[in-house]
Image (cartoon, rainbow, N blue to C red; front, side, top):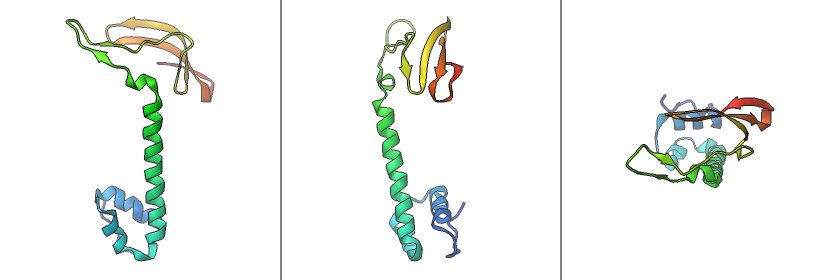
Length: 118
């Protein structure tokens, strides 16, 4: 989608167009729409903040940083799941099965109080 030329577009519509266009020069984009510069800057800053918070959140999850080691056999993960472990929004309840591709665990999705398979 190309950047709309309609100066009556909302800052949200303009920003969506900017993101979809793949254009990387935000300052040049702002120069095209000076009447919406403040609103566009606010949206851009909020988006950047959300991206930073998401990255920090993912980096804080220790299970994403477990190393794998190479050996003569198949890849093996250093990460091990145990009953009662909490992974993100999930509380691990019990092992359901194990096979060549990994393990399947019954868990509870805490936020929705529902049983799921991990």
